[in-house]
Length: 144
Image: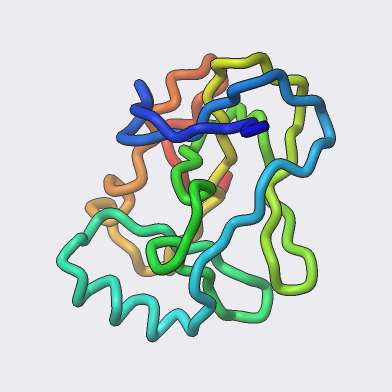
């Protein structure tokens, strides 16, 4: 039985939604895609003609999972400051776990906790405005 589905999100573009109740602590899905260097991922992204929309998931070894290349529905997880799911890296793979009980129909979120270079200007930071609308919204998808 399928437990999740991709559909239009009120937060941003497409989102991932629960089809059935999910329990706290469940391993929900693996974030899949082609593993490559950041340099290769950035080059491929620039060539794609889709700036401003990426499906990159950074790994602790300095490489990246490019969910836009052979990825799965996990790439549609949107950001929320009060996320109901969390990503954990295990042996070079990323798995999404449920943080709290989730009802059927709820959108699934992770906190992106993105990082920018120290020399990134205010204009660059505007690309990372949060749209989650939660009561605890930080206003940004960047790490606190």
